[in-house]
Image (cartoon, rainbow, N blue to C red; front, side):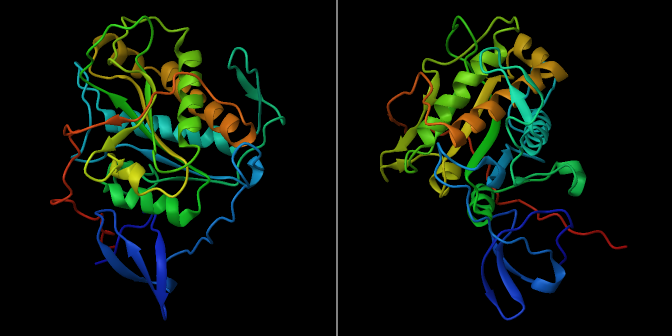
Length: 307
């Protein structure tokens, strides 16, 4: 079959005119090199903390997609829709130059902070079904690895709170096995709290907030497959609780989605260009529960329609 145009693919090896790729459903397959546009792997922006931002490559992963809709709010707002919109906003911010007021978080047009070299979305609205297609975890990480990304950020929103915190119950999970992922998580979390402070809600959260990591006791490595498979600093951002009425209402607004995107953007800029560390970095947690990852056993690779 022919995979739908607009779907990003990563390849590790080639044989003649064929490239071995990982499909959106985590399987391996071969494509003709002449049938695709080959983008060279990024060379890297330099060590995090002192990177050349203008050379940076970032992969942003809108969590969920298609039948894997993620969390659903009380009035039917789906996480997959919100995650994609926020991810597009993050890409737009990263690709443009700005001035940033680090005290207030305000972002305006300017040339103090340059745009990055490239931003790839694992699920893109310019692709099939306006970006509403299913992706396996191995595919998502493989895109970041083969792109040579300097950082990998997966965008999500949460469900099933267990606490009533004074402020947003935002969490950012970091890759235990990749150095500096905890720093990236801490900075994004700090910026989320800055962005969300101007919004009112009956905030909900979990027993632990801030930068977190979960460890599989059987393997002594990352519980979350998307982080375990990543070769660069990688995080999963859980912005707010879409399952809660007031937080779902915020997620329906452009203002809140933009504030979420701006927080992730500022966190990435600080991570790449400064040695700063955020607050609320928690110790690794042994995790034995089922986090509810959707199976890809019925996953379908988007096909190009007959013309």
